[in-house]
Image (tube, rainbow, N blue to C red; front, side, top):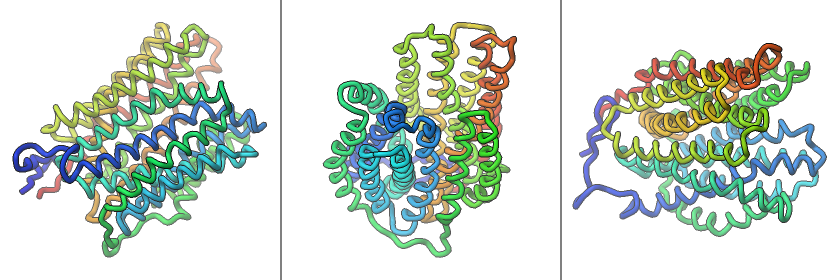
Length: 467
């Protein structure tokens, strides 16, 4: 019999003859399918990002680039709601298959774009597909693997992003240089067809179930409203004109009116259980990805840092995230999970605080940029642990709802914290007395606040369920 401690740690029960493994027995086929799905999603998502500026310029739509770039993240909110509700209603197999099929179709839509509006539509639909896949994958993991194997499964799926993050953007750049930006999208669509069919066939074996009585999920109207609000917020970050300000105000109004219906009650006051876990996920994601957004600008500020050196920061962070995620699933498996969240947040605080001090004191740009690797170690411990906790806190039969709320929090956390850091950076840039690198000090320093908030609130995400 499995025994879960009150802190959420699962002692587990070894399979006859030894410890259960993800690569053997009944778990091998579904884990292979989830891994392939993750690699395909990561490759299609990461490879097209450096292609977008070239594509919008070729379509005479550079003025619409902020919308094209933000459509993917904003649409993820809609996809998360669809994938979560569908998973709770009939199991995760169908939304996973539909999300993968939609991802292939949207790559074709983008690759054949005759106008920048078609490209924006393709990116929006691709975001919907990605949101469906991410949320439904978490629901499938909760349904397929016992508690003792979930941390290991999530850690290995995090590691599956490393390869695409290393080879995707460079290969896309070569394709653009040798042929056309269109072949990045169309080539990825072609590469995904056969593996995608194999994955869909494997996912079809996942059991289906009826929705639990009384289960409700945010409606599509609410999700679309929040998606529009998120898109307006991201567009507002791209400039400082009156139009951008108006978009920012509209985003605040829309999000204030609808976001509360997409997250569990008590999220904003960090109520114990799932609400606190959802809030912490937004704070952690917003902190890390804001730092990640600041690093390229920091390194390219005066042209003194070679592009290869800049790339090392991102390569190092991808590897560090994967290794840290693997370590927390193996070496720290017996630790209370809320302590792993707090420990990862401490590393986030040290990384962002150290980067702020380094920029304020005028140290070379590569020194604060290296903080991204330290922050990735913290996120490797924090992100999968919060996912495990959210699955444990999810009401019976409603892991899709929990995953949708986590996806909403992650996206909005990125937009909100990035908006705050961007505002501080803009204010510092306008100050004539500020040095070039020193201007980043306030924007990086403010990231310490959400990091420390995670440390303080981590105990509220602690599991109290016993079995």
